Length: 215
Image (cartoon, rainbow, N blue to C red; front, side, top):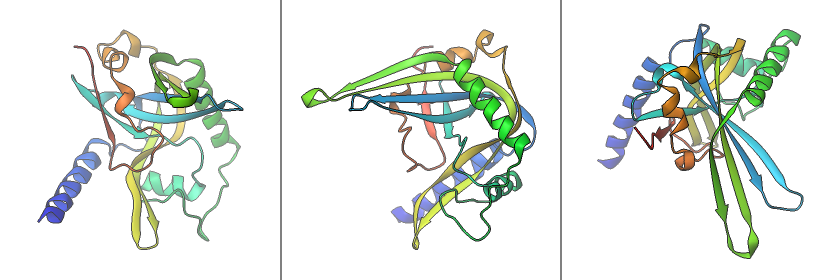
């Protein structure tokens, strides 16, 4: 009975997210959240993880974040995402190709530059362990306008589902959203608690809910 209930909830969630995030090939406003992780190892390890929230989906008390890929995917992954197909970024097949073209590569470079240069720090998460091991995660937000596609990422290992969830891939036409920080919704981004987001893990089902700490 529990398995049947889980299946029903999963199907309902899929329909909800398909209804909310079915806009493809249209310019829209988003907030990109960068998790910049710094570990006190020798040499010091730094890594960035990008997540995204459609601005229209930011509600009064919470909003959902989804993985944003700026690399790793192939041209056939991008084409499939635009068509709304289920894709698997981490599996290489005979159809896998990387012929993006110079224009697309330039667009992704522009987007990455915008995210890193126009970001605003919203939170720092510091962790300490025994024997002096430390990890610091700086969380940044960048409001962006542009075209993104979203689709279901489903990675299989043998006959089992390793992980699946809704992901976003950039398409084209990226600009900084100059009006966002003056909007009421910006407060939800500024005062949210990002410590509950397992940002480095792909073991997710459809998204991560982020709650606002202060009203």
